[in-house]
Image 1 (spheres, rainbow over the protein chains, first blue to last red):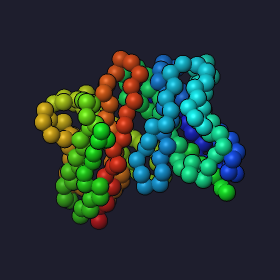
Image 2: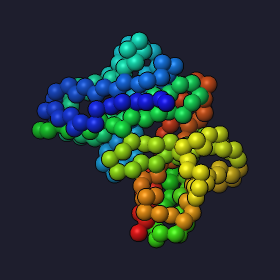
Image 3: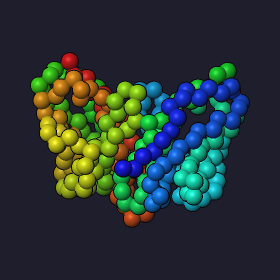
Length: 110
Length: 116
């Protein structure tokens, strides 16, 4: 059974710090990796996708993928209170349905 | 460019009634996915549909739940004889490409079902 593991948190960081969110997955055949942000009572919003080993940067967000270690992470630089949300990791193998982790709650305090 | 549309946004039903949830995918998207999210839990896949076809329903309970995506009109998730345990947020997502290569799913605002 495919599993995607995330620490539920909450992860608490001060404003301006770097928030580091981690995700591990069990299926070595996974090819596509996604990070979604979900505010309380709202729907998930795609913020990053990554398909190759290494880093991918988009503004304050950096996704890091290490397929050998079956590990994907999301770094948020200069964290803002508006970044406070639950971050969902999703992993997909080819045409299969993505598997979502349970999410990590992030709190950025002023 | 309208995103994924879902209605109703909130639905209240009494035990034993039927619930119908509708999803219109983004323009140009022909793949629809339904997920359920219970409080404090992650997204659980239910069913994946293309126009007039159910591709994968492995996450959908065998009884009381059904889904369709007709040639014309929205996708519908139908729950018959609802029970309190069906209370959850139901999200629909759509994508332009169902598989074979990287693709991303875009989520609708969800329907929050409450069963009294």
